[in-house]
Length: 124
Image 1 (tube, rainbow, N blue to C red):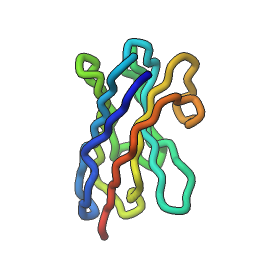
Image 2: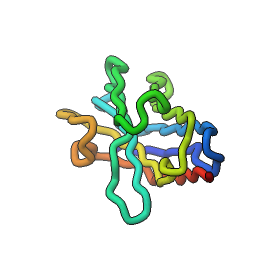
Image 3: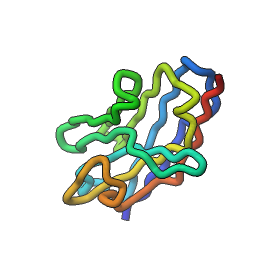
Image 4: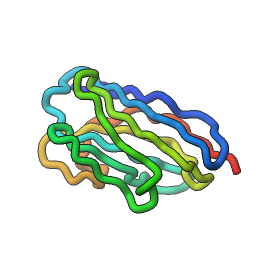
């Protein structure tokens, strides 16, 4: 079992920044990748970005490239999502997720564990 706890969400004005954190505990040694997804009201859960746990290789959705950065701190089993130049359309609940084994980084079904989500609201 793996537990994921997100933090760092909140209300920010357009153009501002936030950093989300996701701390993993439990069977962390088997993680192959971790991802961030977001879900706005009435919409599907969308891929934001991901990081391969062993190498640190990162992936990002086109909508956030150049604005969002994913990183990880292996010693703390923590992954971060640095969000800059935020836009109102970034408003959503953000979830982190962990995957074990075969991993398609943008596919929600390939993640076996999910955090509780943290609200990010960007005002115009």
